[in-house]
Image (tube, rainbow, N blue to C red; front, side, top):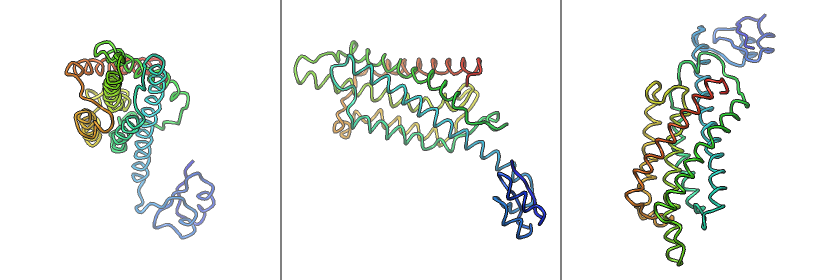
Amino acid sequence: MGFMGDGINDAVALRAADVGISVDTAVDVAKASADMILLEKSLLVLEAGVVEGRRVFANILKYVRMAASSNVGNMFSVLGASVFVPYLPMMPIQILTNNLLSDISQTAIPTDDVDPEQVARPRPWDLGQLTRFIVFIGPCSSLFDYTTYFMMLYVFNCWDTGTPEAARRSASLFQTGWFVESLLTQTLIIYIIRTNKIPFLQSRPSWPLMVVSAVVMAVGVALPFSSMGQYLGFTRLPPLYWPLLGLSIVGYAALTQGVKAWLLRIRWI
């Protein structure tokens, strides 16, 4: 509950309110009792502050949804890979690199635009909605992680562990393939999570978010072909990998958008 006042008789109410608001021209005791002092005597300042607060909250929720659902999906992916893959699905240094790049892509989320309906009214923190979102969206990434596993194992013969050299080559190729797929899907998923509408067609993200995402994805794609990539244990990916990766990303985006639309239709998020 907020209270706005500028006189001596308002001091008690300003102190008792959750947010006491006064103006710069108020008496000293009113300003001392207030939590917030407006430099101009206009309610439009309050409106702008409320809208900005709701925009910040919406962007925080985007980050929490994306980070939590991605982490849950990665947990299922690593758990499944450790069961049937005869080597580490990704080396620790590769996981750290993946997390670093994906975290960099998320630094631009505070600059993102927010749909008007997301700031039209207060949005309380609803742990139930967040849990349902994670439970249904998180496994979508795991599903396409598994398709990448089978693609690397059966299409590119990463089962070959007959000799130490073959095992090293198979492990490196598998880890590189999953690294690139995981990074690109984690970076692109923010565009689906950031809005309840159809991404890009009905709701456009901010240009800083698009630029940072494009740079991170370019680095992830180029890393296996660089000397740094060799140091991290990556190897060059075969040409056939890229169109198959494109199909996986399109399928992942379509499935996630469909699940999100279904959750919205039944009012679960």
